[in-house]
Every structure is written in C-alpha cells, then in structure tokens.
Length: 356
Ligand SMILES: [Zn+2]
Image 1 (tube, helix red, strand yellow):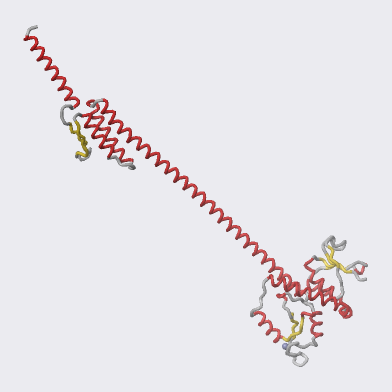
Image 2 (image 1 turned 180 degrees about the vertical axis):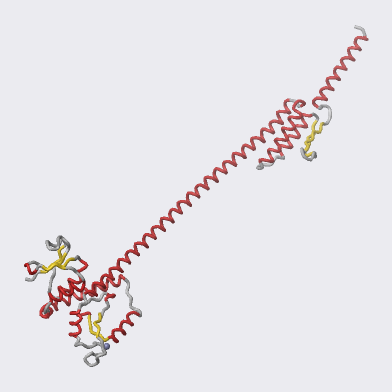
C-alpha cells in the first residue's frame, strides 16, 4: 500500500466520521447547549423553558420543571402540566434518547395518577356528603313525623275533652229540664200553702196588696244541682225573686265538674231527709194518683191505665223518667221500672204501679 492510498483512506474515514457526528448533532442536538421553549397557544409568549446539552436533557429539564410546578389540589392546573408534557414529547420524541423519553413519560404518569387520586378523593367526599345529607333528611322526616303524631294526639285529646264537656253540659241541661218538669201546679200550691201565701223574705202577700205576685223559687238553683222539692222551694214575691236572680246572674256560674258534685251532695241530703219525713208525707197525701195523672198529662208522658181491669198503671218510658218517678215515690206512689215492659206496653220499657 502506498502513501497515496493511505492518505485517501484517511481522508474518506475523516469525512465519514464528520458526517456521523454531524448527523447525531443535528438529530439529538448534542455538542452544544440546547434551549427548549414552551409557548402559550393564544399569546405566543414563552411560558417555560428547559436547558440541556441535547434535546433529550432539555426536554427532561422542562418536564421536571412542569412536574414540580404542578399544583397539589387543582385538577385543571395539573391537567395543564400534563398537556404541556405531551406537547414536548410529541414534538421531540423522535430526537430524544430512550432513557430521556422514559423520564419525561414518568413525570406525566405521576401527574395522571395524582389527578386520579384527587378524583377518587373528591368522589369519596361527595359520597360522604351525600350520605350525611340523606341521614339528615331521614332525621328531618322522622322529626316531622313525630311532630305530626304529637299534634294529632293533642287534637284527639282536645276533641275528647270537648265531647266530654258537651256530654256534661247536656247532662246538666237534661237535669234542669227534668227538674223543671217536676214543678206542678199542685207542688206550687203546696209550697205557697206551707209559706202562708206570703214572701218569705219581705212578708208581702196578695192578701194585703192585690198587686203582689208570688213566685215559687228554688233556694239552691237548678243549675247548681238544686232539686224541685218542698225542702228546696220557697215562696218569693216578684220583686224579691227578680232581685235574687240578678245577683245569681252576676257571678255564680259553676263548671260541669262542680255541678256533678253539687247534685251528688244535694241528692244525699235529700235521701236523708226523705226517709225521716216519709211517714208524715204519707199522711199528707190526699189525691196523689189524681196528681200523678195530671203531672203525666202535663209532661206529655204517655201511659196505659189497666187498673179498671185489675191490671196496673203503665207509664211508658225509661230512665229519663227517674227523677219524676223519684218525686212521685216521695208522694207515696212507688212505681216499678221494667226494662221489657209488659203485655200492655207491647214490650216497651215502662214503669208500673198497682195499688195494694
Ligand atoms: Zn218579697
């Protein structure tokens, strides 16, 4: 081999070497400083840059800056960084060495998993909040239910109290009506006769003054449980009676409860008196059966008289006549109550009396 050949080969070798180095420099950017810039799509301004001795190391520098500047909780901010890393990889992946590309991708993967974590946490938070909300809603519903039930119960109690009061009121009314029915003309006469036909308060009498009108008055008013019977009746002149009524009306009302008490009291007092006064009353009874028949007619109570045929006197009715029958009994005629009545009443409830 001569010197010329060796020289030519050397020159060719150098040329090939220079070509290879130039190619590598061109492809990978090796051999000097490479600056990689990221520009904003809208404004075109440089937002971030990476520096290295090759495209790969500049890209790694840029990606690491993007990775470490990513926000920790704001998903949209993290997504921005991922988009930027993608841009870098897409643009330079053909000119990056494998290891640099993997590094850049690992930054991207870490950011993606960060987003996934945040999304999971967000979902977990939402689930917890929803569960909390449902729980509160349920509690509210139960609370409402409880309140509604309490309100209903209160209304029920109120209604019961109202019904009870009404019942007592109507009992009071019935009592008063029954006692009023007992005031017969003959009883009125008996009272006036006993009091000598003069006002027991002021003594005035129609015998002395024809303008005087006498009333028979309940000493204990019916509304307070008083009874229509001799011991609770007295003769008053019109003036005294009206004066008394004014006084009563200006203040003495009684509650249904008090009323029931008063009736009980008055009843036991009457029973005690009745037994001791029984005998003398029997002597006083003149034409009692006639009075009773008169009373029945006045009160519109129907009766069937079978006495002429050797039967009984049947008064048709039930316990609403209790008071009247008690009154008649005190007059000396004891009627017996029969729930099923008799043949004469065709099975209707009735009170019967038969003379001995
Ligand atoms: Zn008087």
